[in-house]
Image 1 (cartoon, one colour):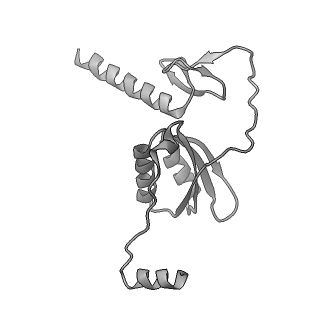
Image 2: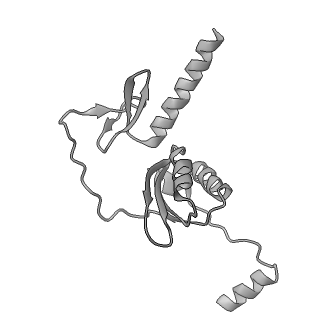
Image 3: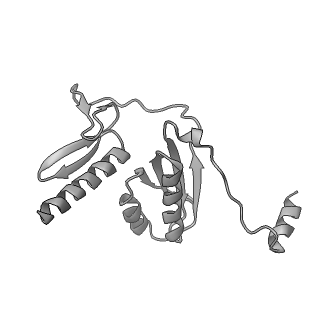
Length: 162
């Protein structure tokens, strides 16, 4: 089977492979793990840090020396993220998390409950934070953080136009 596919690729009959994901996969959002083989880890970490969907970035030993975790709410955002990764021209491998078998329990440092400054949901994990005009805002996920920043940019533009 592999030899036949290899011959079809070499002869140009097969141009590319693709994956079509079921929209049901994204009902609760999906977590994606991406491993990069980066020649310059610092530059890649800087680029990944600019992406709101990236929730965690690790520099590791081994062939995939930068690994990140993204929380994706829909297929379009997954496609957009993958296109950005292709533009970086760094080899990468993507894995969709199908099931979390064990998750570390987060113990809050204080017993006070935080609510997301965008959606109002109670924050149960480590909050995402954003400081604006010396005020700290708390968010339950990178999507709420991104939407809050977009809202602030729109308000700033309106303020400047007035």
